[in-house]
Image 1 (cartoon, rainbow, N blue to C red):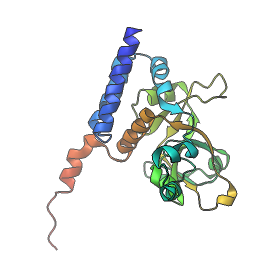
Image 2: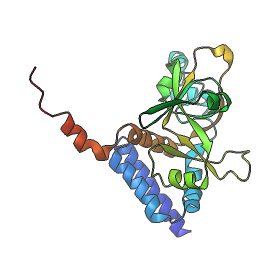
Image 3: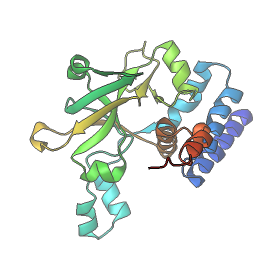
Image 4: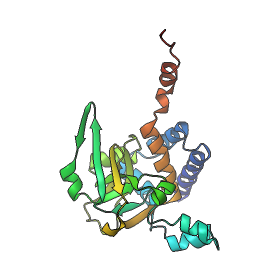
Length: 234
């Protein structure tokens, strides 16, 4: 029990560091190193991390009175149907594109039947934008579970099993490498069904992983050198 409390305290301190460094790469590496050092098996990582990630959906009626009490304009301006990190069910996804090397593939047939997504756009875009970035969420195989819950890949964000999942579903993951857009322009087609929101810990982990996905800090030195090469004479 004391060991469990110690792990939770250590993990909480690492997450606070993520917050303090605006989800910096060095802090993200501390997270991955924590799971590598403290847990030898995928199931142990899953057992520890699963309950840190999701909570019931954050409800607008609760948020409006807590964040903007008595301010009708701010409440109206910030009304949301879903937030960054929400797990949603919908078939209103405009595109599902995956880049593999130099080849670009569009998974039209899969998109027509896939309906579980993780919202990636920031909260403000989820409120105001017509197109919102989402990533498809899948049932994790044992191999995918090992990768996602070790936080070894910038492309796979770990997700626990959902209420109502069959017993054989151990966990899920969101594939951040598959660019997808939720079309919010026609409200008559219905709103997504919200299944869960991220906890504060889950939200910090998602934003840190999104930064790793689009900007590899370990490659920063070469990136800086490239952008300081001498200009050619005209």
